[in-house]
Length: 75
Image 1 (spheres, one colour):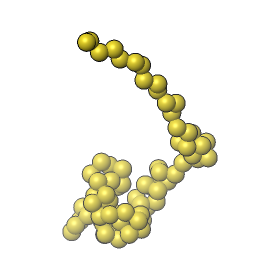
Image 2 (spheres, helix red, strand yellow):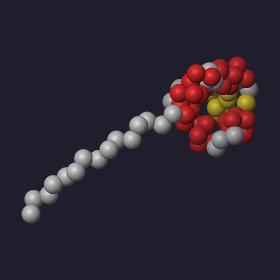
Image 3 (cartoon, one colour):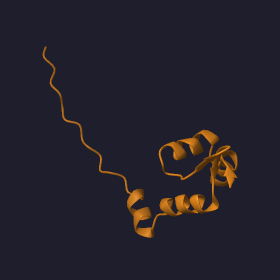
Image 4 (spheres, helix red, strand yellow):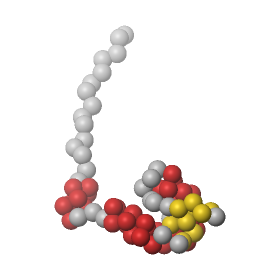
């Protein structure tokens, strides 16, 4: 069982970000004396964040720019 600070180091993020993952339900945890994350729960979270090659390509594309229409102001 890992402490939240240990999980944060493994995920290379802050402790507060790790608590956010726990509160939103994205990262499973146990409440014993303190909050603990098992190795299995950490692996499940990492698997859920894994993206396939098609998803990586899709996220690199930027949406088309919208052109602004001219606005006529009253004189």
